[in-house]
Image 1 (tube, rainbow, N blue to C red):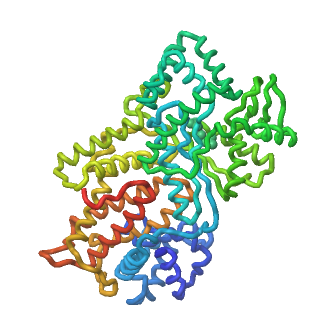
Image 2 (image 1 turned 30 degrees about the vertical axis):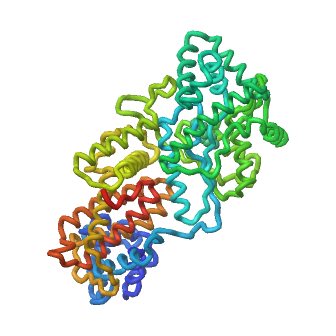
Image 3 (image 1 turned 90 degrees about the vertical axis):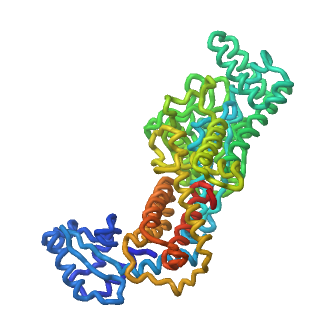
Length: 569
Ligand code: ARG
């Protein structure tokens, strides 16, 4: 229910000297339950009414108090330090919210606001030459969760993994393979063998410059369509791509398209021609550029003097292609904040070209990850690899479950679900721009603000429901005299779920959902300690209905934030 609006509508029925419609946007949901459910800070009204805020609050309070009726939504009002605090009828509110959740079930928190609209999300999009490492977690998880959020508000979504399958790294890999590689080893060890070669290349190239020349030559051959170069690079790229796809699958990230940069490498000319025809290009030291200085965006390089194409140019070709294929209403690119300028340039050029998709492109930029031990060093092979992280997570959660004596039917599956939840939660728990430190040990803790703690709370709900083994007839559920500790505060938190989805969508902040779920988990555990849901074999239906509502919110919420719901752990 929209608590604030309903309280406001009810208030408007009262006969008051003030016209509430003039300042209804000042009403807010109370943050603290001791201030009621909705409150009106009267400070902004002082000037208008030439009266002190506390007097306005008091006047309103006196007028309303006289008219409060027994069966109305408003139960009590108080004037405190310039605030008008409104207390809703707990019984009515609780009943309404729980009924809504239990009837709407998986649709609670779903909207069709953007029905018929399409959003394209470009995320993960890793460079294939490197193993996926911890630095790729945020783009993959935040992107995936943003996709879920967009779905939740009604969009049709298209997920694209715009893999970096183009460029000199592949020239380097071929060079390394030619020097030190052998076919059987690569066939046997696959991507690991390729990675070893790449690491070796970087080590040796530090002292031997000629290797880089060789790599450039191989890359040029790839571009020119030389048979051997193309075959070798295709072979290597497919191996790397397969591994990335496997890891994405493990994390739950599935893509509608894997069309990467290479696809556009020979489709640059039309882009360059179009820019030229629009009079946007200049030649500077042999290179083609678009001067964006007047917008404070520097000079964008479109084509290098040796004719090779660039990241920006490929992105221009890619966005055109995507618009042709999907006619999107919105496109979101999820990357590290370091690419901010790149996307600003891209969006500005699209605008200058007056493309139909100008104004529809958004960059969701997030802060960097680091390990407790320091920066992620990706080039030299000392990075925290995603595959290792996942494996360590699985082992660690197995260990913890053993320690705790947790009995599950499929320990492998559950520990993987715990690991995926922990990894997702880590990537989502702070506002996206924050630089964060990834502490795996801490993330797998079953106590404190962690994903296992939430999953465990969900499992607790499931086991209570199973034990109670009772059907709930909503008409019979009665919340008479319900108190904060008896579930009222918890129910109000549950009611925040739909608005939180909308906020998370608007602000592109998945952390809002994760935080709400965490608040619900801790409030639920308080509720659970304070009340006997099943007392001596007798089920309290009122409490049980709350447990059911919590379970539904966890299920709906977990699905969005990529935390597996585990019914037994
Ligand atoms: N492959 C790039 C990188 O790892 C990210 C690509 C993001 N998407 C895009 N359309 N530019 O830095």
